[in-house]
Image (spheres, rainbow, N blue to C red):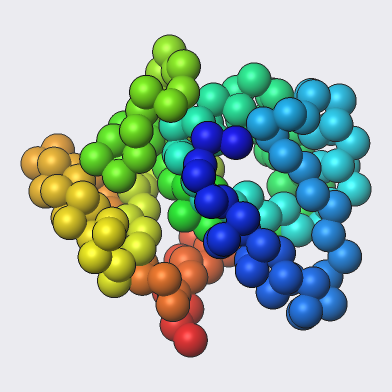
Length: 169
């Protein structure tokens, strides 16, 4: 895992799902094979992809062919939930978060995202640790008239077909 102390944020996230009654089947893309991705995605009703370094996550998505199998699972009715980097990899290109995450922690030939959404998502907008870098990214993306959505940590972006809405606590 490329992130230090990732257990500090990952374990509470997983515990929240367990406390809500979900039966989890964890897939660690850092060590998973493509066959493991296929097996787990074919059984999943909900696919939750969490945070960390966005560039590293995209590298692992590519190495395991996760995107191809994710798209198949989504066609079959699975629901995708992305948190932080897990939502950013859904955008057309992840290069806009280079001020937030270190691109050198991955070996990517391209920063093209999965393109599950056609806009750029600014996450952690209420967090000082991230908001300054995200605001810089907004300025750069606005220069090219990119479509941008902003969300805070207490919010979620809900997408169902063409319906896009922000859900708040």
